[in-house]
Amino acid sequence: MSLEQFIKNHRNDFNDKQMPKASDQLFESLLKQELHQSKSNSKKLISYLSIAASLVLMFSLGYLYNKSINKKNEIRNQLVLALDGNTASQRIEAVYEIEENYKKEEDQEILNALYKMLFKDANGNVKIAAIDFLLTLPNNQEMRLKLIEALEKEKEPLVQIKLMESLALLREQRAKQPLQNIINDEEILPSVKGSAYASLAMLNQ
Image (cartoon, rainbow, N blue to C red):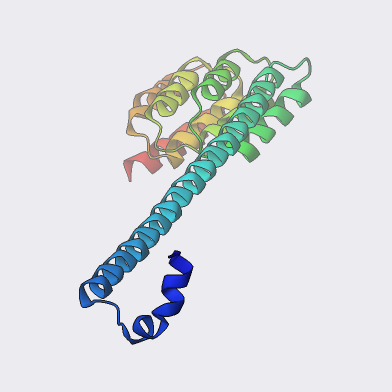
């Protein structure tokens, strides 16, 4: 007898039969296991996607940051070169550009270029522009000492007065002796001496 014929002959027996209880429990267990595994896989996939997205974002931000830094360094280098311009107006303009882009930033390369300008530039207005920028960094001790050193060496009256006023504004007590030396110097112009007296009086307050 074929299987098909056997099923036909015993159809009623099959209809009356119920799935054994153990089979029901096994089926439910397998179903729960499959659902749990599917849910777990979904969570893992979401976790992997989140990590991948974070990595992409991190690398993108890093790239943009480095690009921005490189661009800023390029501009900085161009401005430092401009401080050695052929004309005084070019050098002053370079100082103003630096002040606009690097105000309150203690970039040592820029500071070194400005110190060089303060001591060696032949134009008094250029030196005064450099002093104005240096005053934007009042907490920089090196800058304060450079201003004192410049005051001790400077011979241009307008620059001397600017240096004295700047040191008084900074309340730089270490400038007292250089100011006193100017007061005692018989070759110093009266206007410069007057500024030295005023600056020293301000520091003594």
